[in-house]
Image (cartoon, rainbow, N blue to C red; front, side, top):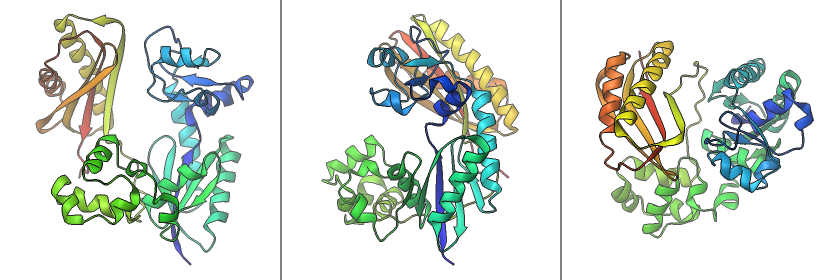
Length: 343
């Protein structure tokens, strides 16, 4: 028997849950975000494939989404409904008997010993569909990295195997940003070294990359480009890395005293979320989105892990003071980050 890592990713999860509740919307462009009113400020949480065809995607302002797709159906975010659907999906996955690691609402890794991973992937799709009527894509790999990237090639509702055997054939000429964990900023820094493709990064001089990115990140980048990653899948309960709240103002806030008051209010809400987790925060991050749509973040570490409201509030204010720009503010957010592992 051969050990495989499978990555399960629910297709257009939030939009799909909404369509299940409103079958008449099937086949229509659906956008979920804010309170569902595109005339108000807010961003897209998710968009159906039909809406994505018009250039609508997560994080896009609702007003921009409405301009790109005037016929889109806009719906308000309903977090409890998505959490309930996610619980049903994960229960269906665990019923298959494989080690299952939940990664969030709509994705999970499974460790499977089988000679036919495609057949097992088909069982996963059938089990989830029978339990929830939702579709998923399953990526198959020798490790988590390969399986995660494989789902992108299998969407929608497909099965795709990505291993060391076909890694360079599939990804070799892709930009470095195609790799899991490499964002636009890292890709830009790699480009400064003359590294723009996965092949180039895989064959790059490790010492040169380490000199630019550090002794830990540099070698990791090269190993990632070679398709090398962890194959460990844990059945330990999923623990979120952070808890956050944010608010989009319908009118820009220009008074910085009001900004401080809002940060304190949001920090109080985040404190309740931290207490509900029964964990301690170690770092507090504040997000500010200025008019028209420029976003910046600053964070501060706590002197010691804490879930006390006064500590979180003061840390949020300290992070806010790192912002020197006093332009009109359209969005504020506070995020409490937890330690990587707690005893």
